[in-house]
Amino acid sequence: MLLACDVGNTNIVFALMEGRKARTRWRIATDARRTADEYAVWLMQLFALEGLDFKAVSQMIVSTVVPRARHNLTVLGEKYFGGTPMFAGEPPVGYGIRADVDEPGSLGADRAVNMVAAHELWQGDQIIIDFGTATTFDVMDFAGTYKGGIIAPGINLSLDALVNAAAKLPRIAIEAPGADRSVIGRNTESQMQIGVFWGYVAMIEGLVARLQAEVGRPAKVIATGGLAVLFDECTDIFDHIDVDLTLRGLAILAERADMKAR
Image 1 (cartoon, rainbow, N blue to C red):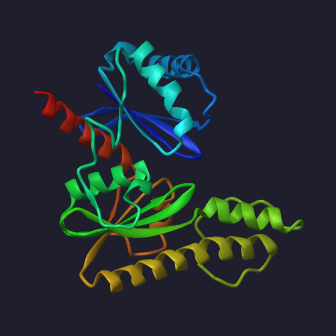
Image 2: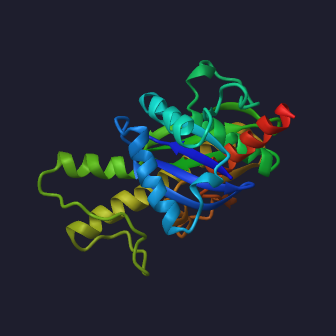
């Protein structure tokens, strides 16, 4: 099986892929100091809990936006999985998409891998929204060319900034509003909840509307990231939601590398 590893600024997701489907996935906080042996001990325990054979992994592929994590993940692959991991965007797993932007080299691996998957899975122009530490909006045309996008603070970052800057405001959980969906808060916590949640929904809807107008053609809106499902309850702008989009993109890149090697 393929072990796909998506390294974000906040969390790392490891997933065992069967084809393009995640059989199981595990999440750990991103810490560039974590050694290969620490990863291995953690993964061995999780494999055992799932009744899986650690030796079943025949290939490892990594997408990372944290350069300092690269070395220990490389050692993990070489020491415990019998080979150097593939890294998304580097031979033999180039993205295969064209970037029509001012700084093509600055495109994050996670965003590029999302576009690889979206272009493979759906046709036409696309707006891909990834709800992570930052919320990113990526515009890709029908030919698979990256045209640019938007980077906005993630909703958790927005909430942290609010709480840290205002001494009397409590920390609250991010959750969907109540059944009445009122936007008139009756207490401090409900007012914060409304401001953070509905404010974020309004931002998403407003930015998508502006992107759609600038594209000038119908564009599918594809959402990924853990909070995509939460926002889907309160907006109808998403055409597709795939929380495993990045993992599917990594599996697609691994498939292409295998085909080239044959």
